[in-house]
Amino acid sequence: MSTQKNWVIDPAHSVVAFKVKHLMISSVNGSFSMYKASVKTQEFNFATALVNFVLYPKSIDTGSVDRDNHLRSPDFFDVEKFPEITFNSDKVEKVDEDTFVMTGGLTIKGITKKVSLDVEFGGLMTDPWGNRKAGFSVNGKINRKDFGLNWNTALETGGVLVGEEVKINAEVQFVLQA
Image 1: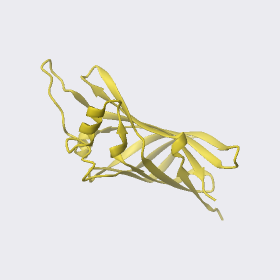
Image 2: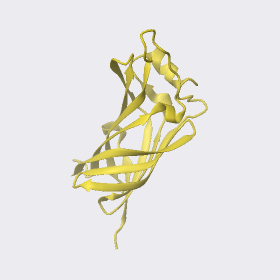
Image 3: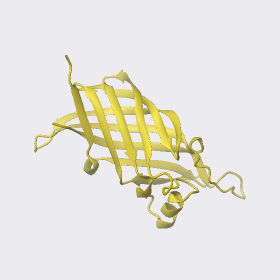
Image 4: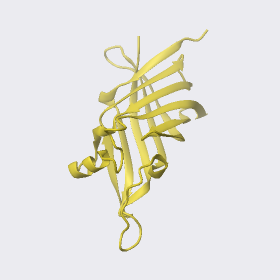
């Protein structure tokens, strides 16, 4: 009989970031500093993982206070009305020893869409204090307009100010709970 393992994210050793095109020629990078996540697995089999992730968009940081405030506004995340972004996995498929595809529902601004994320397993390790940890790189792409993040400005030269595709990258470490 296998036993369920419960894991929680270690925010001191994790980064949740994104990248989006600006002026169609370069990218703006940003990250979020407030989030929580839990994972349930059967034993140490991450192909059985059930992931619950909550992100607080008010914690966005793109390196520009004005841009961050605009992203928090109703034009984008509307953080007063929608204080959380959530992801709940419904399936993890093992591609090879260290690679998985995780699918689930991503909810932004009350709109839930199924997304697939590429997950690379970095390994298991016990830290100097006896805590069992697991590391992962998570990557994916979404179209921001699918989630009601529609604000944009047309450019005189053609194209738009902000790209529709948002690249997601998370480098995360989880701690096994006793």
